[in-house]
Amino acid sequence: MDPKTEHLWKSLKTSARQRLETRDYSKDAPARRLATSGVGVSEAISGRDELADVWIPGVEIFPRRVFQQKGRGYFSELARLNEGVLERIGLAPKQWASALMHRDSAKGFHIHPPHLPEGVAAAAWFRELFVENPDDFSRRPYDREQWDVMFFLTGICEMILVDEREGLTRRIMRFTICGDGKPGIDNAAVVIPPGVGHALRSIGNEDLIMVYGTSTTFNPECEGRIASGIENAPLPADWSGYLENHGL
Image 1: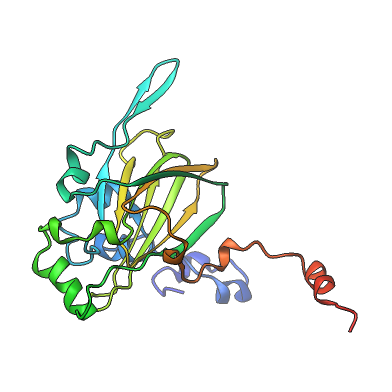
Image 2 (image 1 turned 90 degrees about the vertical axis):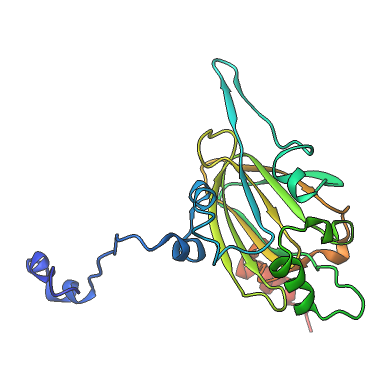
């Protein structure tokens, strides 16, 4: 217990005071929160320059507008391939898909293998792409590796990204995105490069519906998993025991 506030709790039993903890409500710097407790996605977008030292190379986050239509619902665009971030980085998804995550469920970590040219060291390749030539998007082999661009239509998504590419600093980004059903400053889309692990949690009070485009078509060999046990709903212990009992 903090000696400065100990006097506030003197009327409690000694046993309770010894176990007492108080929460620290002071705010860490945005860079630390992005890598630990997380931020609202709008804070990540607006603070991009300030967060440059902790931003994962190749990750793009761009805001989206949701137009409410009184008495009817809302309208929102996903993206235009001839303008905005996708046009700037030259990413035109080859396949589109949708997914639904029930409230309080989670997925990941998912990770896709980056393409590596023959005879080139991975660390040197990634430094060339993302450190030495970060704005030369024509070098990116979109057609030989899976990049994802994700949009959220309903619910609230907590996303965690981890850079696992050889030769690049292992950075973590954690942020929250609101689906279009909750219009506001935290409506956004995310571009995720291969080699970056990504996990999603549905933390709202409704199901999470997402739409995502990929730079290549689905290939099960390129669907990697890391620490993804949360995706497997455990059976009750007595069921597992029964199934494992072969009568031997």
